[in-house]
Amino acid sequence: MKPPDFDYVAPTSVDGAIKALGSDSEAKVLAGGQSLIPLLAFRLAGPSLLVDLARVDGLDHITDQGDRLVIGAMTRQRRVERDPLVANRCPLLAESLRHVGHPQIRSQGTIGGSVAHADPAAELPGVVLALGGRVHVTGPAGDRTIESEELFQGFLSTSIADGEILTAVEVPASGPRTGWSVVEVARRPGDYALCGALCQLQLDDAGAVMGVHLGLIGVGDRPMRAHAVEAAVLAGANPADAAELAPDGLSPSSDVHASSDYRLHLATVTSRRALTQALERAA
Ligand SMILES: Cc1cc2nc3c(=O)[nH]c(=O)nc-3n(C[C@H](O)[C@H](O)[C@H](O)COP(=O)(O)OP(=O)(O)OC[C@H]3O[C@@H](n4cnc5c(N)ncnc54)[C@H](O)[C@@H]3O)c2cc1C
Image (cartoon, rainbow, N blue to C red; front, side, top):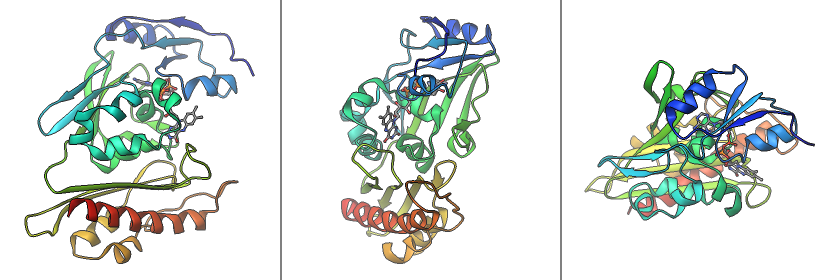
């Protein structure tokens, strides 16, 4: 299929992009195009104007802010995956990127595009939610920050308003004795996960778990945080017992790829494996 007709602009500043977006109620932001262009080709989206962020100044950076990493929205996924600072300070993010599609897709796809697209099976929204990250957005009314708990509203839906642009993604930097793990089940390497668990935890000096973050993808209309599992781990449960709580509050739908029951089973299995590996890495 060929995309429907659309106009195209490539502003060089965030202000210019906001103005262009505001000029047309059917305008859409174009980042790496790895989700939007297929949607256009299948005519599942039909914007009258594409506002390409590729030339906008200041959106491609990885900044160390001490206890946080701030990553510009247009930073390509492949750059984030290979960046030594990210590998050191947020290894969960680095590892999760290796599960995103294929290298060619990651060379074009951006971190901001993936988070704004909010696919419930996508790794980057899952990591941002699991770690309690946030996003920075700019719009006609100015700048604001959205916490990850408020960001993901449903299937491909976020609280970023029409006319706003996501400018940066912020994640906490990990401390000492941190372990992490990404465990997914997908039909083929590079496919979106049927279910995935994204885990980061930290041990105290005595070797007890002092903090745990567990995100689940592919098991709902948005990425989910496994609060019940986290609470059990903090209370001293072992990975196998804690992971039994992973299906709590989940009601994934069945589709041609997997039944709801199978996805719930995978939530337990991937959680157990991710917790186990994260504990081994932290020790
Ligand atoms: C074959 C294939 C396999 C894939 N497999 C995976 C996978 O396993 N896991 C995974 O997570 N992803 C996967 N992807 C998707 C890929 O990660 C995309 O790069 C990502 O979903 C979107 O990022 P993008 O930069 O390409 O955004 P685009 O496609 O350009 O935009 C996506 C959406 O986000 C909006 N948007 C983009 N940037 C902004 C911004 N800064 N502010 C506001 N709105 C914005 C756009 O308007 C659009 O609605 C796959 C893609 C393909 C083609």
